[in-house]
Image (cartoon, rainbow, N blue to C red):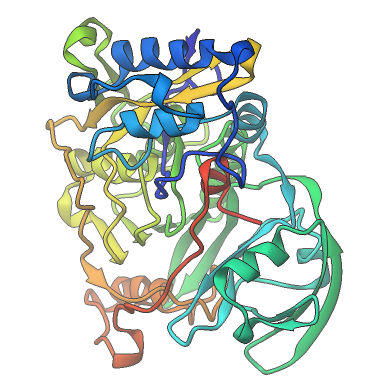
Amino acid sequence: MKFSILNKYSLVVILASLFLSCSDDNNILPRSGTNKTAYEVIDKTMQEWYLWNEDLPDISSANYSSANDYFEALLADQDRWSYIANLDELLAYFENGTYTGYGLSFKFDSNNDLRVKLIFDESPLAAEGITRGWKLVNINQLAISNLSEEQILNELDKSSGIFIFENNAGEQKEITASQKVLNQNTVLKREVIPYEGTQVAYLAFDSFLGKSEDELNEAFTYFKEQNAKELVLDLRYNGGGSTYISNQLADLITGNAYVGEVYSKVSHNNSKTSENFTEAFESQASAYGFERVFVITTSGTASASEMVINGLKPYLGEDNVILIGSKTHGKPVGMYVFEEKALNLAIVPISFSITNALNEGGYFDGIPVNYEISDDLSHDFGDIDESNLKAALEYIKNKKFPVITAVKALSTTEREFKKKGLEELIDAF
């Protein structure tokens, strides 16, 4: 059975890792007589719906010990994203942002310090005062500086842990916490910043999930109430999600000015051209039009996020969709979810390409930025001293970006953990 995630929505997500398992041993759905049909379902789905179905290799599933390994072997060279997953877990995440963990995510900065890059409202660590920018210096009585990435991951995988965090002032906090079932908030922060006489709306948005619809409506209603004049849209870690929510966000930004006009065009493989369609801007009660938008991006900005950027440009104009940070991930394609309930299996192949109203797409190398600057992990979202947000505020004030200093130049040493399958979608521990 084919469906698009959240029942009526197409799925546009980032899966940067080539690992396709959602288990540590890469061995879900091993070959046996009881689940042999998994291979048949994969074959049928890929032959019919895979965007690059004409490039499928001539291989036999009999040579592979698990459905995961077989699925990976089928993928085209340019495909960094298709995957299979546990159906129940996938739906729980995309409908409600539900997963089990500590509710935060990390990134190594240019000094090799492991910093909190984001934290969800329901995180037990957020309740203890931990925010983006804090360094994790010790876990389970082990110094982070003495551990390999694999060892850190092993400690974070444990159901409970003792954490020592340190803030920018050098103050440390020891916290004992346990993993819990939590629901991710997709709006990480929304506020209006009075800056040099201008009301600047700031929205840090992490994922395009089903619950995002209400969260975005609330944010834009607030922007309207505060009479915001400029918008800074922080998508630096937003790897995508529902195309429906992507459309909604574009509607909210443009203030219903383009209702009925083409937002995106979706094209399938040569055997499925009858499935091609366009998506139009729709009317939103909470819409509040901005004449331009500053978008903070990194290589983690992907899919539905890139769709918003690309979809807005024909209407706001290239000069009014201003990107700050580093070039985006580069995923102008999307997926459907094909379910096999008997196996609790979700097959999620790249199934279509996406262009805007001017037929512009194909940005596999990423969308370049107007102002290149490193990710500032030392400040929380919405902090006016955070270098990416500060660059946008300076442009609003002075009509030009500040001069880049060496310390803020694009870093080549920042890095993140490599994750597998659904873990990559959630992008949090």
